[in-house]
Image (cartoon, rainbow, N blue to C red; front, side, top):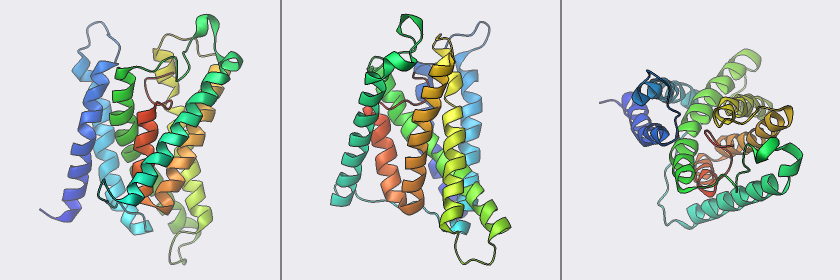
Length: 234
C-alpha cells in the first residue's frame, strides 16, 4: 500500500479511540442510538486525515515521531502540562466573572473527572489536532500561499499566522455547542470565556505545529491530559 494511503489510514486509526470515547459523554437523544452520533465525528476525522495528508506536505508541514523517552519529548510534555495547569488555574480563579447562575458551566477544575480526562486525552488531544491543525490549518495555509504568494518557495510567516489564526477561531467556535450540551445557559460571558480560552490554546497548538510538529503533538496531548477546556467540557 502506498504511503499516500498509509498516512490517512494510520491517522484515522489513531483517532478512532478518541471518537469512541465520546460514547462516555454524549447525551441520550430519544430514538437515536448513541453509535449514530459517532458518524459525523468519524467522517470529519477521516476527511481531515486525508485532506491534511494531501495539503501539509505541499506547504512544508509534516508529522514527525520521536521516542517517548527522548529528552526533547520530556520537555514538550512538561511544557504542555505547565500550560494546561496555568490555563485551568486562570479559568477557575476568574469564574466569578463568567459563570452563570448556580455555578454553570463549571470551571475546568470544578468539572474535572476521570471521564473528562480520558475524553480530553483521546478526543481533545488527538482527534481535534488531526481535524483542526493537520487538516484545516494545512488547507488554509496551502490556499493562502497559492493565492497570495505563489512565487515564494515556502509559506511566509504571515501566511502561517493567518492559517493558525483561522483554525484557532474555528476550533474555539466548535466548543460552543459542547458547552450548551452541558445544560448551562450560553450567556455572553460564558461564550466569551469559551471562545477566548480555546482561541488562545488554538493559537498555541497551531504555532507549535507550524514551527515544530513534534512539539505540537507532545504539548497538545498533554494540555488535553491536564484538563484544559476541550470538547464536551465547560
